[in-house]
Length: 217
Image (cartoon, rainbow, N blue to C red; front, top):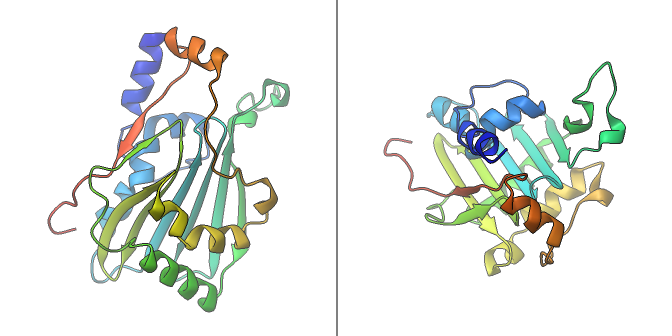
């Protein structure tokens, strides 16, 4: 089991080139690349539309929310990944319990501009927080964007002054039909069963890291 999870952790770094990240198998293989926006970086230049991908990690395996929009379509795509429940399995789709729930809501120019201003205030488009670590078993926001022809990947970890000061989470949650189910950040209590499963290799933990930007991107 430990070898299996080590392999899955390695595969999670495979480059994301599109496809349904809500599918649990696709997510296992491409999650790190998806969060870091490697597909966005590949097409980001002066002629590209502005594009944004925000990920709220409220403890991997319990709740993760993905928000995506661009400067062309007037809509916000929302995907929510929960912990899955064996009771929700069906013969027709055994993986249904682990698929992302998805919604699309209208996002007019005023709302888009407000989100961009809030991201700019949080320094989403400035020098990234190089070296910042984003552990899966924690609360954080990650942002991958192509804004005005420049790609940036950065993050905000909880607890921190930067996390608390950011206004864009409230703006995104205000657009989210499932806002009442958002898991707020909190101290992570000691979980004896989780630690036991971790020692025997039955759970997977991983850490994303904000790296220095590649020249020319």
